[in-house]
Length: 248
Image: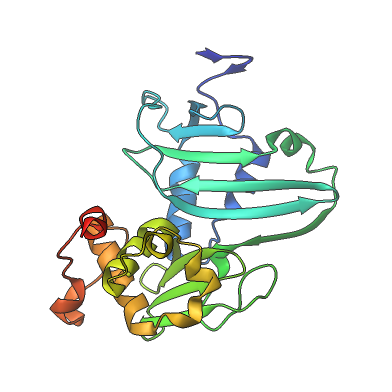
């Protein structure tokens, strides 16, 4: 099969694997599992976003570009001299994994370039500051050192550290903020529809509400395996949708 000037399916190049594995530390259970999955996959073709956006899967599988992108599983950034490569790996869906390698044209030259630094959220563990810039993060321990909600205001990022598989699950800001606004019973659209306030006014939200917002978000979207019996049932009961709430 041919797609433009590229022939598919094809194996990942050594350079592409190196870039992908920069976001998947092999010393962490969940990321090691994704390494192993990717080792068994080939590049089926381009995704919906063209150059640098690919779909990985089994050799005998059909390329699926109709399904929506799944949430992001891991990201990393590698800097070579004046060049930067951004790596994005999505959650597996039906035995296929969408990846995005920004500035992919540099990949064939990385052996000739001097690497200045690299970083990824995947390496973060409780007690550390934010990757790369060492900026402050706020930790909310739903289960001490085992299930930790992390908000990095300087990065405009939210993730949850899960000790079971040692993965840092990146959480979509808007969906999380919607749950938080329901809990706060905030009906002012200028506040309720402005998720950036989570970062600019983080000190105005207490740990209990932030933790509860995550539990509600996760129960609805089913991102992380959580034992809800450990929490008060009232904390995970959502009585309204966000849209209905704003109509009141």
